[in-house]
Every structure is written in C-alpha cells, then in structure tokens.
Amino acid sequence: MTDFLQGSSFFAVALTLIAFSAASACQKKWKLAVLNPILLSAAAVIVVLKLLDIPNETYQAGCQALSFLLTPATLCLAISFYERFQRLKKHLAAVAAGVLAGTVASIGSVYLLCRLFRLEEALTLSLLPKSVTTAIGAALSQEIGGIAAVSTAVIIITGILGNIIGPALCRLLRFKSEVAQGVAFGTSAHVIGTARATELSELTGAVSSLSLTLAGIVTCIVLSLLAQFL
Image 1 (tube, helix red, strand yellow):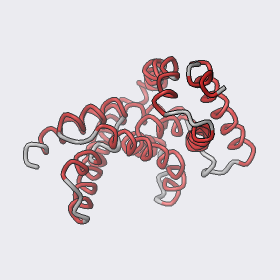
Image 2: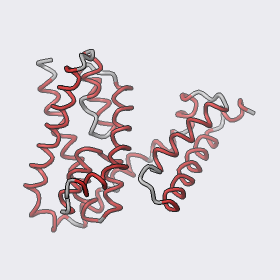
Image 3: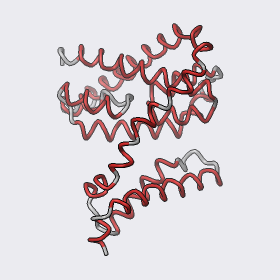
C-alpha cells in the first residue's frame, strides 16, 4: 500500500488539497489566528508522511503540478494592484520609503542578532533574505554564499508568522491606515502575508503586492552590496 502511495502523484496532490481544505474549515469555524490554514495543513501533511513512512522527496515530486501553479497564482496578486493603481499613485513615495526602511531594518536586525549569537557566516547569509519570496530568497542566498534550503525554511516560517500575528501587531502598533498595513505585510511577510492582507481589504492587498515586489528588488541590491564586505 505504501509503495503504491509513494508512486502516486494523485496521493500527494489529494493529501495537500484535503489538508488545506480541512485547515481552512477549522479557521472559519473557530476564527483563531493560531489556526492558520498554511500552518495546520503543513503539520497535517508532515504527520501523514511520517505515519506512512513516505520520504519528503517523494511527496515533493508528486506535488510538482501544484508547485507549477505557484508562479501564476503569485502573479494573480497583481490584479488587485492594477485595479487600485490610480488610488495608489499618490502613495507611491510613502510606500517606497516604508519598504526601504523596513527592508534595511529587517536585514540589519538579522545581521546584528547573528553576530550577537556568533552564528556561522553561511547560516547568517542564509537568514538575511528571510522576508522576500522563496524564489528570490533561495536564489539570492545561494549566490551570496548561504544555504538555500535554510533560507527556504526561514522564509516560509517568516511568512506564516506574519500571516498569523500580522493583524494583531497592526492593532497593537495602531496601524490604522490600509496603506501602512499593506506595506507592513508585503515588506515583512512576502506572498503569505499578502494573502492575509488581501483578506483585510482590497487596498491593503494591493499595497502589499506592490511592497513585496519592491522589497525583493531592494533586498537583492542591499545583500549584493553587503556580501562584498562580509
């Protein structure tokens, strides 16, 4: 039975979709931030794979069809940005300044903490691009001497945390402006945070889409320059 499941791409896709659907239903029913669909579904998939003794590599290979859809799904986030472009034009300077400040603060704080705890250089370089999308962060990490696998894991964790605690932090810090909320989500929690921002309002999602794009560009520039001095 296990051999059949390992060789079936249908099982990997079905497991992923069922886990995410069940996790989404749980969040809708109890409405708790900790019941994040991405977090719950990931945990459920890990448990099932362990129980059935199915290697992660086999599961990843079976999910190639879903992975292929990630790029067009990410591009679809630009729709809300396009629809709100006229309204966003007057906020472009503020968004750019917020993204620049947030990106530099993120990279700077991670670097200082890594130095404080005396982490190895390779691990430090792997943690620096934690707030950009996986496609950018993993490639950038490898280019500057980091470990792509570590960067990928950190980026996913960062996105999930931003998705879960982002709304509460916005309330705590009194970010009442939809533009400010969008900048915060897009700059700190990339695509996963943007998905949560879109749930708050269309404008917040549009700003977050723009912010994650600008944050990716700024991160590439800053880390490329910083890597020369590390």
